[in-house]
Length: 307
Image (cartoon, rainbow, N blue to C red; front, side, top):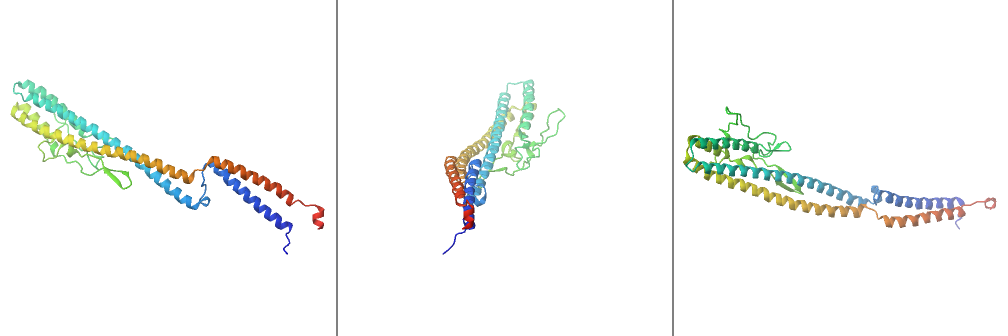
């Protein structure tokens, strides 16, 4: 027959008290932090899922930042292309006005003065920057694509402007998991290459020369080139618009994904305060009852020792 000693009863009592106190402490910790998992040992499997969801949420948030940046880039490109088209339209209006054949040379000279200002406007547009980056020079965005010298008349000399070769590299933005989107439009796409007769700088040079010479026939010939360049600018702008629509859809998708991922993370990590409140009260009552019962069990007297 096994004899239960006072020492054994005391040890068992302390063991049970410590277990009840530890459970009550864990519950109160979850209530104070609002988290079911405060250390890996609380739920090793749950911690694995928690880390995975946190990584997914962090990646999603970075993609959303990339999307916001890409939208800013595309919108700025769209604005710049609109400005390019506006200046081209004004160039066309002046060319039509000059090609009527009823203008004196003084009128040609006046029109040529405005053409000179349009030239300066095209140069400003071609060297547009967003956050310190030249948008029309591909991956060489830290270098001015159309860097012309100042001529004797105080304006930029674009005699060799058609020969400028802008960088063809793509500016890619990661807007999703394995989703990489090239956003930029190169200067040669917008303003033309050296082999294109409708190169904007060629147009300006040819129209200006025709105005100086009063060559109405040449001015009429340049209208066709202006129209083809307008079409190319509009094509580039439509591509930018298509990319903007796709990025907007991606932004909506990433927003939905963040909501879902955050909900999954919450299910793994967040504690149920109402449930914990009830649980804490029950555990506190159990602990109090254990202390009360234990005080009676381990109480000793002289008679106990005499036994």
